[in-house]
Image (cartoon, rainbow, N blue to C red; front, side):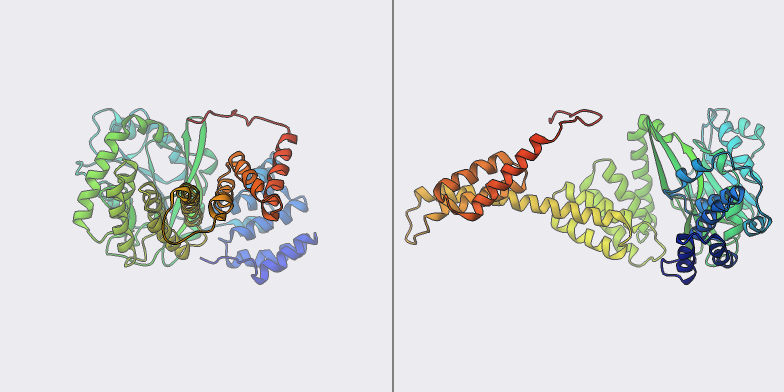
Length: 493
């Protein structure tokens, strides 16, 4: 994949022209870049900006849309499309239309189901406009799922359930064929009507890529009143390239003949998903089933990083933290020999969290350091490095408080041969305790300790400085208007 870095020559020229409001100059720079690299999301956004400023709103909308398709987490998108609302059907300049064209590629839709009579009609209806044909793999429904799917126009494949999700999905391979692409969804995932054009666009853009491109979609999870997008679910891939589903559970797309190079991207194919709310009702049974299948998978393939990684994650979620740590370490070790494994950052994040929960902070620190070293652009490694450092600092500060108090406690009863400085219990240890208390935010206790030390040494500049800082901070707090956060202040339990 060609990525435009911030110092790419075309990008420097384009940004310079845009800042100078030389819109045609910007267009003249960006157009050849997109003719060469039509998957350059930033170039599409720059082109949209230039076209918008020359009042070519229909073309601008189309270019912004293409940029957002190729970069779905983009923060600019809602603001821009709100600004251009009403122009989505405006005419597009012919040369822009030509630039937007992609080769026509066959796209199949596929759904794995069991007892989804209440949802399968809606799922198929949402998917059909985006694909050439819908294939449904049924694993033993006892309700009307099969009849409803056939009535909705889908091709239905009925298979016997063998405790293997990967095998169930592979049952569709022959019907899906060996040309074009396939987009898989679950029965409780409904393709957003605004994105029905996207699967064919990205299939056309990435069809000839070598190594082949695997695409993640955007799972828009509806969790009560909260909506959370998830960008890490790979569901679309080219057919006829040796790719299919591997793994008994938490199945992943991979090469059937062993690891080979592949590329991974993301497309703005949004599917609305309410499954997690429903899963809450069966969560305990679901994870017990998952863990059982994952243990079987690790026995079948003891060197498979994905099997151990998913086992570790589900063990952790189920509260089996010690077992989770062992499995996650196995996943990390196996991943060292499998460069195609793409979830090592997740393995290390869960491993850090598990080690922290077990108070194995030194191990967690080392794992976090490995996470940062292997993927410095991913926030989780940095977060866990910070969290562990903070927890270890808090441990050390607690020890500082305890040790300073112990120094004051043992001094009156010490009767040994070697004498000690009387300043330790009278002044030095109380000041250390005050410093540590201040670091913990226990400001009133710190004030009391500093005040006691000041009575021993009224002219000590360091102690007076700390008292002044605490006094200034207290006055600043009192002067600030007190406003409750939107949800109020919850009592500490």
